[in-house]
Every structure is written in C-alpha cells, then in structure tokens.
Length: 200
Image (tube, rainbow, N blue to C red):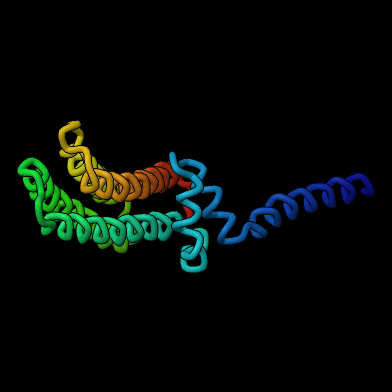
C-alpha cells in the first residue's frame, strides 16, 4: 500500500511539473518561441513584443498581429512610393518603375487587408471549411509578399542606381522581411491546427 501511495505521489508531481512549467510561459515567451520559426527572428520579436498581451499565447492572434504589422508597414511603403513618384527630375525608367510599384503595393495592401479580416473569423471554421479558408489566407499573404518583391524588382537594373532606388530598396527589404515572418507564423498556425496542438 505504501508503494502504491509512493508511486501515486511521483505521478502527481510529474504531472504538476509538466503542466506547471507550461503555465509559467509568459505571453512574451510565447512570442519569442514562435518567432524562432521565422527567417528574421529578432525583427519578429521586436515587431510583435508589444502585442504579446493581446496575443496571450494564441496562434490565431499571433498570426493576426503579424499580418497587421505587415499591413501597416506596407501602407508606409506605399506612401513612400507615392512620394517618390512625385519627385522632380525622375529618370523615365524610374517614373515607370514607381508607377508599377504603386499598382503592386495597392494589390499588396488589398491582400493583407483581406488576410487580417479572414484571420478574425478563423475561429468559427472547422474541418475542411477551415482548410479552405486557411488556403485562401496563405495565398493572400504569399501574394502580398510577391507584390512587394515585384516592386523592388523594378529597380534591379544598374541604370536605376541612385537615391530613389536606395530609398525604395531600404523600405521594401524591411516590409518583405516582416511579411515573410507573418507568412511563417500563418503557416505555423495552419500546421498546429491540423495537428490539433494549436492554441485558439
């Protein structure tokens, strides 16, 4: 009987240790751990740490916050593109590239806006319905990243070298990194949901 009590106490302590350790994870720890799956970990943590309190260990809220950050950065980039396009003494190829950039960033913002809205509703979807909406979400974020790269790619030629290209590239690299992180976190949300290990 004493042995039975002894083993029961060991089992109880083990359970308390495992689950107690999990409950000790802070919202910021959750963000830091999740960001390890991204290509730009430091940027991921820096851009999402202020949202930790509202994310509260939720994969869905984490992905939504990441896309919201990406959307804000995309809007800022679009404003820069618009400003640069109004610069005097632009080279003809610069003007055309910026004009194309305006269209690309408009498409990018539309995709990210749809993504934020879709993530807000993901909790109500189940099974194949969830998969369908998640596929749409992943497609939109991926499309936004492609639009950003297309914008920057318009200035790839050496003849475009100059202040306009430098300013644009600096901004677009930052936006693309943030969006790449968002896509990684969305993909992580999808995988954990499929495995049944996600945090709603």
